[in-house]
Image 1: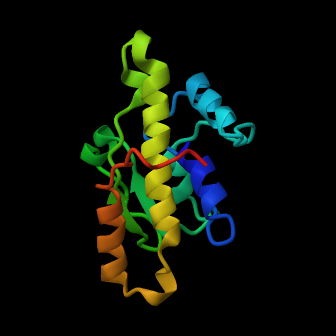
Image 2: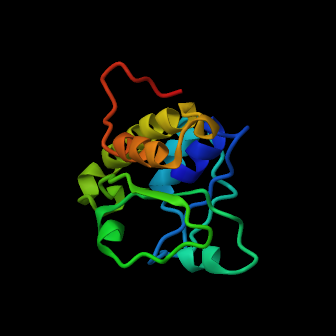
Length: 151
């Protein structure tokens, strides 16, 4: 969902990629359903390992955000180019008991959407690197409000 959201809200400035340390081999059907509900394409999304972005031919990364607490506790690689990193903890909606999965994915979408919108409103070229790092970390602690709507 984060890849699709950043590619939507940051389309003029960013190209987003999503990867994990233990990819499942498929995009969760509920994630695709939530994206579809918001008229966002999911057909080009696929499960991938973060090691793909360590290869010499990999795209240059300027920012790396971990979204789950488990990933934040794992040993993360030293990314080529030393991108700005932050943990944007989001409860794993796929780990929720069967009865609450749909709501968990909607909640995760809303939280990620709020943070991505804040992130894409930053003007990185005007910010000093340490200030930018603090801002992306602050965004990772942001929660949506009741007034946030799903664009």
